[in-house]
Length: 150
Image (cartoon, rainbow, N blue to C red; front, top):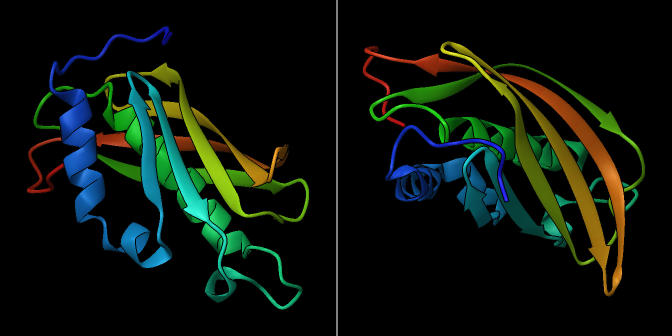
């Protein structure tokens, strides 16, 4: 259960609509796995087109899904009509991302009026085995009245 309370009663459908419009996540093949107040999970199935020269999932793909998971976790707590933009993140690659899929978990640490700080984790799944392969700390900005939707 989330420790956060959404300001928008329609937060889940708003997050899902916004995710569906995000072409880069579509290009990667990422899917929205879970949405709760202050919490979003994004899943990515491993495929050869997303690997680097050693056969592991590319760090750019891991960073992208972790960033989006954190961003959408932040958006889930924002008021109706607000949008979110990433303004900073740091990612630590802990182990090669090997397996059949990865799951990025974005969690809000602190939601402010303008700035939200999030924590992300990317877990690689290989059959029944799972292993944390990356962690992220991200800062998100609430955007209002700038012609940017969700």
